[in-house]
Image (tube, rainbow, N blue to C red; front, side):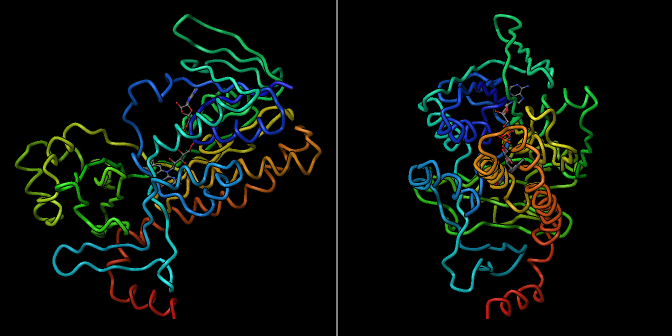
Amino acid sequence: MKVAIVGAGLTGSLLACFLARRGLSVTLYERRADPRVAEVERGRSINLAISERGLDALRRIGLVDQVMADALPMKGRMIHPIAGELDFQAYSASGDRAINSISRGALNNALLSAATAAPGVTVSFEHRLVELDSAAGQLVFATPAGKVSASADVVLGADGAGSAVREQMLAEGIVAENVEFLDYGYKELSIPAVAGEFALDPGALHIWPRGTSMMIALPNPDRSFTCTLFWPAGSFDALTTADGISAHFRENYPDLLPLAPNLVDDYLNNPVGVLGTVHTLPWQAHGRTALLGDAAHAIVPFYGQGANCAFEDVVELDRCLDDTGGSWSRALPLFEARRRENTEAIAEMALANFVEMRDKVASPVFRLQKQLEHT
Ligand code: FAD
């Protein structure tokens, strides 16, 4: 039984680890060069909040201790108003429950290394899927050496929000998709360590709620913070000069200015990312081809649950294979039936949490509500 996984990101690499334990022959095809040796392309967030849903999957393949060794637990939100005191809001009444800031690159590399070390797993880097016959399990990849064909009994698309597997299934007329773009973009900035120490409390997820927009910051193991601006899409272009950028931040994020010496460079040079929700129906076809993770159901990042949810997909698919005696034709529809409701729920919750983070957390009534919930 040959399984092809397209995409060696977080979902694909984890999936390879799980399938290898079933004694399957797995090939991971990844369009990028090996990120463990190549220059990492700047893309999405540098760090991720990983919570219990994600840790559960890592625990099952024995990777949780390695990944958690460099994790920074964040036990609540630290609200930064324009003026006045910082406000710490614990995530739990006991104050000891936390979400964990983890480096995306380190997590991906740990999963890739675990996948490549697993028996039966091969990784083909610089293989970009360009054609798929989902009924026949035939794949074509663009590689530096030209086009390469491959075949597999099962094809799993773990190639992210802009999935080529989904696009091919769409072209075959076997799936429908609806991508709802948010009218907001995001841009990353950095707060370096000061004399080797964190410039802000590393035990919190920092939020600068500003009504219709916001900035957040998560700590990194090198004692820097990565900030992410979530602003209405067009508004990034309004700031084009060093003076204009400094003036805007002085007015709206005054406590950031002394902490971010590279603010103007970061602002001018870092890209603006798009945000959206992907709805796909169905996620699988022919009992041999399926989508997982962001390829099936990418969500906006405001609950910090996209990767956690993708990891849950992998655990659930593994469970479905157990429950069907390893029958892919029965496991894939079962996987979709069990996961769809949950992924639709988190997609809605993630959108709703944007309003909470950028606006409600700053309100005194919200603070009272949270205190009541904790009593
Ligand atoms: P991806 O990470 O997109 O990986 C897809 C892989 O497929 C990549 O390696 C790509 O190179 C490869 N690929 C793409 N096309 C092809 C092709 N044609 N052929 C071969 N390979 C291909 N989630 C959380 O849980 N917590 C967070 O705090 C969090 N923060 C986020 C912050 C931001 C700003 C964003 C945008 C997202 C955040 N997420 C977070 C969501 C998380 O990043 C995604 O859910 C997660 O990366 C999904 O993993 P994936 O492997 O499915 O897709």
